[in-house]
Image (cartoon, rainbow, N blue to C red; front, top):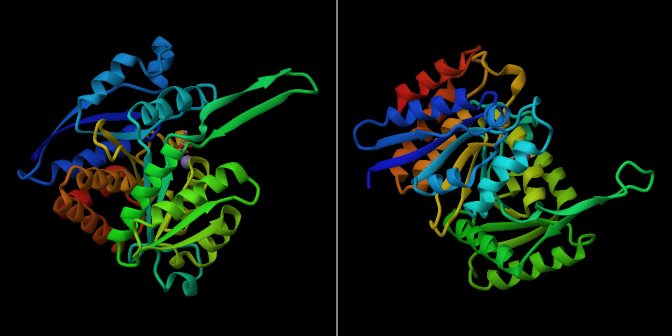
Length: 344
Ligand code: IPM
Ligand code: MN
């Protein structure tokens, strides 16, 4: 198949601007790939206008597409959590995006804030963040709200089924990479129930992948190594919340959040996967042409790869790499998109 039907959710803030550049680059691939797009209006504007976040009918329509490209969801004019819990997370849950794939790679010419002796070894790892469980499920509540004895709970839900499928996916990704190394990041010395389930699952699934070497790190220690020796990582598998946190550090050390791409992947292909930059909606710079669209463009490359267009994905990544290698001075969002599109 070379003709694809993509749903586009620009979303809030800089989301629509950066997604437009991702589409520009897809359009530049030429006649060997034809992409048709349908835009979906989700996010702050729709909520202000109609009070809706994610109508069921939209979820059903999204299921009919080959993939989804998303910009960003979140806006300061909407109470915190309404759009996150109303749009983004329900999309990940409804479409069962249990693999939240977040590569971190230091491209040549990109400066990391880490010292030269740290990055001279390179940096090229991928975080497989569980995408449908953990404290993200919304299991919890508040008691005696507003009193001095208020209690709030956020229960982290971890199922054997949910852990096993993401761990197996991470092992398969590790096996396909040169180093074949997988690190489980958790906190089993304190979160003993979930931690032991994760650890046991990694041990058991690991038996199916005897050529993959495994390691374990507590999440606090992992943050040290991400900042002092990121070259030690190849594939990291971790839960939803730890994965959220460490992928921001990973983005920072790999040249900044403007370059960090991600995929919310349903490996069963029973529902479309959704690709989005790791960054948020950056309302402070929205509409000014200041946002770096590179993360959205690399997310579009991940979409191509997921659709089986490995050659085209590599072309986009190479175009980004070539652009990054020559970056100097400030360019607008659309000029960066033009430059990368011209190279694919
Ligand atoms: C991310 C974001 C989201 C998350 C928010 C916006 C719900 O931070 O994609 O990393 O926590 O997963
Ligand atoms: Mn995040």
